[in-house]
Length: 469
Image (cartoon, rainbow, N blue to C red; front, top):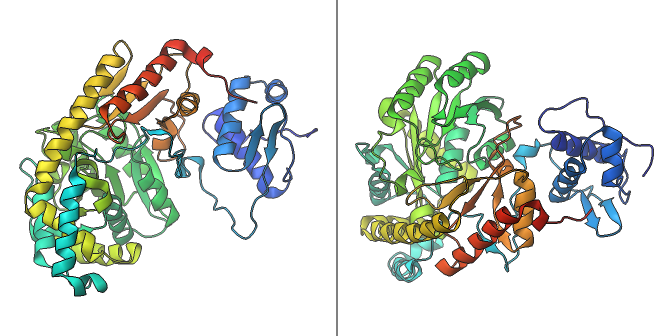
């Protein structure tokens, strides 16, 4: 197409992101028609005064959003959009970069679900026994929760000196559902929720879908910055903050007791509810008191079985102040459609029998074996790994960019996550890092093969990867 230039005067964030947003906006407005060919990357780079790499990254982002297709030797073309299914106006960070329907022939380093250590046979036995003993409960909706479900949550969320009462527990359909139920119950559309720039961003995206606003708080090498949290509280008046104090996803930082105390004090002063995601904390032996111990009257602790026992069971629980319990339980039912008896009962039996703890120990041992492979293979490069935790935060050497490196790995059959996958909102911060998990490949030898690919790309630099234009 000719005589067209993007409007880059508005928006925030990196230039490639603003360029992709501008092109998407013009596609939505009909300025750029379906089937139109976008300008060649070199031409557009010259016209707006940037590099070809910036244009290529913007075009790749548009491909990931399903707006364009690239054809080798022919260029990049705008795809027809389905008018009967209008696309919601989400920020780029709210859309994510992860491949939902990943090709089955790829090594999945983009997941941190519990590794396969033979738990399938144990779960199969529990499923059969539950179906035999509770046929009526399985055939119907779950309306009454047996006391053992609350006791199981109390046992599973117990860590260090944090011992939640069964009366504080809400059984949930996984940790994500637990957090979203708390958000839906304790905030209203238009309310602001605080997130770190890098975090488990699917919570911020989900919150955005139900009308909540996002405010970002800075972090440093020691984790969330209490001073910046206080600034955000004073300026944005948030109702809630989502935080992962122990082994935070994706940076693996653990907050000190001093910072947890400061966060609790600020939250109390500004009346901010706290959601403490302890999903990875369950895998560690970190002795730091949970955030909930410093602010028990306003902290909701969420955890589950997905990282340490079996993600497919969808077992989860949250512990909350008693005044919140009924509201959150009702919100969970409204948000999820209800808790399936079969899954809740199997998760409970895993915990109450001690089998969940045994499986967790085996998962930790397997994760540790795989982390040892990573540490040996990537020796000399800048990365963070923590014992027992199934992912690695890799800082990329110059001139790699996070998204480009992700695509290079994908071309070699390895799925990893770029830093944009973990951005809770529009952020000017650039980390030049990627996260990859080690728990999903079937065998340790598959992990070794995937990490070898990552090592080879790091050694070769971008000369080892060529994208098409």
